[in-house]
Image (cartoon, rainbow, N blue to C red; front, side):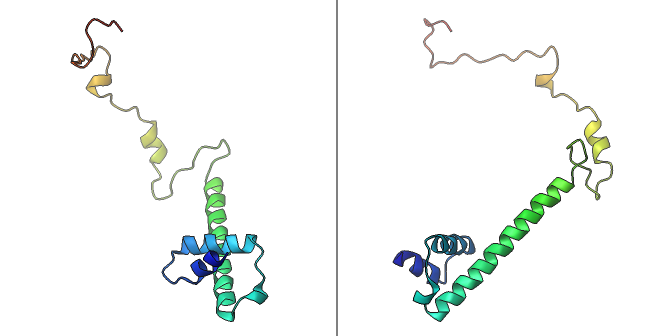
Length: 117
């Protein structure tokens, strides 16, 4: 637990690490009465940031869900109104995937020629 407190007080910690540390300390049942005021302020800021990140991530999921048509297909991007028309056009096959193309493999010198596959 001392490690968690030291980690929470480290200034160079990334926000993700700080948020994880705050969550771990919260889950471990730390009492705020045992903390110095600077530690309490840091934890309060980390908790606010964690709530903000959770709120934004849930918003982006909701937005992604609402950007789908009733049949669950993604709607066209407003910046590209012809997106569905472009995707509906058949793609040209590359030569190696076109009918009649034969892919000739070079013999593998590492295989034993006496063993049949």
